[in-house]
Amino acid sequence: MTYQITTILLLAFSVFMLTTACEESSSMDNNEASERPEYAIALHGGAGVISRDIDDEIRQEYVDALHEAIRLGRDMLEEGAEALDVVEQVVRLMEDNPLFNAGRGAVMTNEETFELDASIMDGRDLSAGAVAGVTTVRHPITLSRLVMENSRHVLFARDGAERYADMMEVERVDPSFFHTERRYEQLRRAQERDEVRLDHSGEQSMNPGGHAEIDDAKFGTVGVAVLDRNGNLAAGTSTGGMTNKRFGRVGDSPIHGAGTYANNETCAISSTGTGEEFIRHAVAFQISAIMEYTGASLNDAANQVINGKLQPGDGGIIGVSHTGEIAMVFNSPGMFRAAADSRGRFEVAIWDEEENLD
Image (cartoon, rainbow, N blue to C red; front, side, top):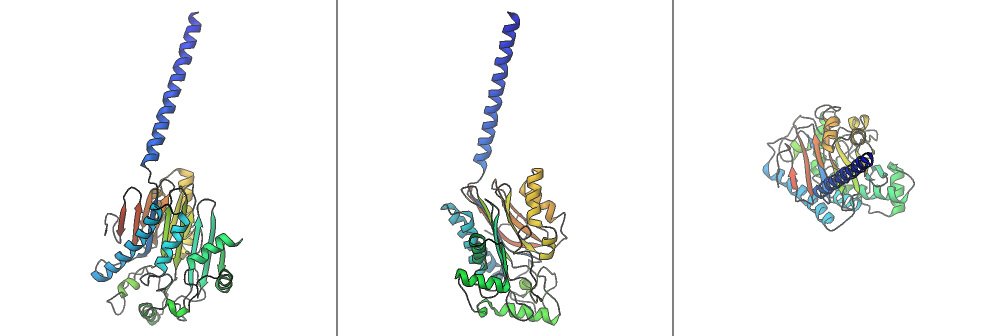
């Protein structure tokens, strides 16, 4: 009898402990879930050697442009828009802004032409689309999405991408639409030095002043990463490439896993920097893989790659994790960037992480 009573007491105690542990675990899960933002967005407009001495009016132009883009994304997410729609619309806005090296305002090739690249990725199922070297498509990000959703392929380039644009009936423009005088002058400065401008170079322009210090010392690629209210992630990137580039050069922006990546299990990433290095190190995918295989946070994983694998000055990333964590990590002196989430975070910055130009 004593043995039976003891056994019953032990069983009852075990059930009590198991129930308590489950309740505590459920409470922790609920608390963690309640602390997560319902949505989050991060974006960039290029990274590199951005002088703190740039003209105040010019700096304000970039701050205003970043404000406009992050407000658009935040407001769409607040209203329940899906991640892919937010990525596309925010990138389109930045492609139309001549301050950035994407769409209108793109840099020029050695032959004084424009070759635009873009990519987009859906974190729900790893669907992806990209275009490279397009010359008449007003919004390469939109064509990239059509590649993803309406073709069996991932990447179309140059003439093939233009033919696909014909099929999809996207908005087309004469190449002169992309032209800005400041980019033409930037090309001339690069040609005088017989160089391909990797815009992160610390050299100042031969005729400093106006936008020249920014044009000659930064990347202007644009990118967006989003977590929506449904828990879905998406990312997109768009660029005009490198000033004075030759031979149909393509960088990391249209390469999934290098310039763009999104996976609902981990994060959404958009890169900006020395494209060749981001391709060699599969930067965007590597950040996701570190999160998946080690359980690292987005910021920890991004720091491991940006500050552990790349060389100082190579550039940076913006990203959002599946839990709503935002990362904006770079190893260059500055990166045009902005972030917002449902908990009230809203910031615009250029230089140090602590700085907020809101």
